[in-house]
Length: 224
Ligand SMILES: C[S@@+](CC[C@H](N)C(=O)[O-])C[C@H]1O[C@@H](n2cnc3c(N)ncnc32)[C@H](O)[C@@H]1O
Image 1: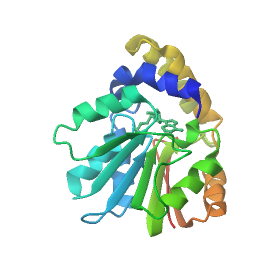
Image 2: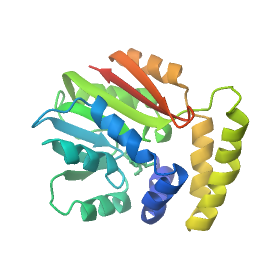
Image 3: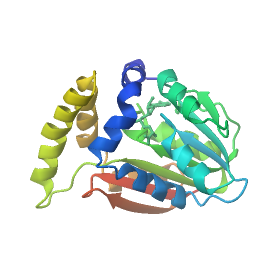
């Protein structure tokens, strides 16, 4: 488990939701809706949301479906906010490492994650764990940033990523260095083709990719 990443998320928890809305112009809720749609949830489906943070993906799932939802994260401060938001106690919140899931094989109908893979030491290990705990024919959906591709928009996107977001981080939060990390990890992250390849190696099939926000966000969905 990366202690540095864990402590960074503990430090930014209080500002996290506000920064998300501002950085994405409020579009992040649209991507999370798409994640839940791709998860193919049915009544009583058992859902695990990894790196759940303050629980946005879980709350989106609970809005539409009678699911049995578990949110998992290794940051206690993020989970504290998720638990406070869950006023009707509809979800289970667990502190654990996404690279070492405390669940039996074949436990979940669907598994989602938002901005996990960019932060883990081993993407292969993370997807293998996800494959292990998913039931056969279960669906995995992964939302993350993706490096901007070379096109006419790229210079503008780079200005936004490298200049504007750190500035917003400085003005709105007490922890601007975390937002510098966010940009660095976005630019250096695997592209969609590379991520797809790793998913295939880990056993997933029927991989579908959807990009958002001028190609800087990607959702990979697949089946076990
Ligand atoms: C950028 S936040 C995303 C939160 C939420 N999924 C969302 O869409 O807003 C990333 C979260 O991943 C968690 N995280 C990173 N690496 C993790 C790991 N190895 N195990 C569990 N949680 C992890 C962090 O604690 C943080 O809450």
